[in-house]
Image (tube, rainbow, N blue to C red; front, side, top):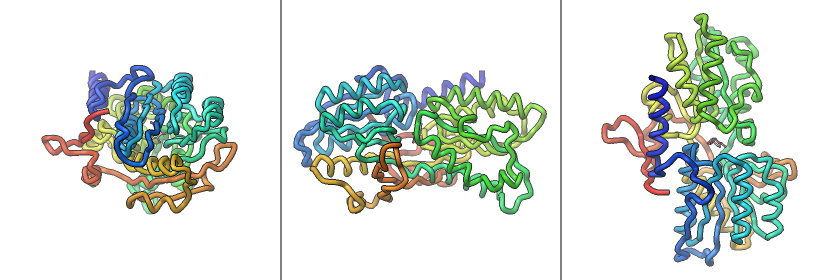
Length: 390
Ligand code: GAL
């Protein structure tokens, strides 16, 4: 019953987020709308935005912020969510190509399955920006806008190091990893960043992984599914922690997986300590868990800023320019770097604009309120989204 309530709460919160009204994807047409073409220098151009799914909270915010910012700049927006189904995403993008959009922004469901479709975009003269997740094996991607993904994982690992005082404490401490979707190119960066930050302590035996699951493949979570993360953690707890072994850290790559892992710990962990649980995204349900002490931190990525950077890159492309390092000066103080070395998609180094993530704990939640994207609820206890419509 307890577990059921926890799941229900997270679903209800997801639905409440941003007034999205629904956590299902309701097909490919969801969110599509026309802008007013009224302002800016858009020249009546249309931007096609392909988002992965409405079932993971952050993409609702991305879709909303992108749509608003592009429409405010005078563009028409065609926004599609593809229900975490890569076939559907290919079809949705083909539809946008047929609609003659002028630019495509794509947050890939599976970074390896879009080559043919994006080649078609290229043949039609449509530039493609890989949004947040790199798209692999195609030269049709012109730019990549994301956060420094390796740093996301590094911040999680360093947080654990500092919390446990690994340089001084005797240990040993027990840790388990939960990583993301193997189809998402970001997921490996997150895992590696975290693992590398902790590797010397693991090698020295100060951090122990009782399950023996030390590789990304062993701890990956298809579709970043909360339910899968929950089941995997329940199995790990049953197999390796039932005899009184203490779990000190559950290092989770993002908030959707942290939600499941925290539920498993709440329902199935017998120990009396509170394990450190990491996350990423600042999802509302996870921010509640942080207030309640069930999750310890999240790495926050301001996706409104990611949308703003994407708009600047898009504008430059649509105006016939070739964005480079100098474009960073137009980001209105948003901390971002231009990187032509780090992200190779198997065909080329994709020029990248990378924003900066940072750590949120229950002690600095006000930082999120200060972004204007979150607000305290009536009791000043939990955070809720300030966004209103999608
Ligand atoms: C990643 C993204 C993360 C997280 C995850 C699951 O690609 O960078 O912020 O949201 O997908 O949606």
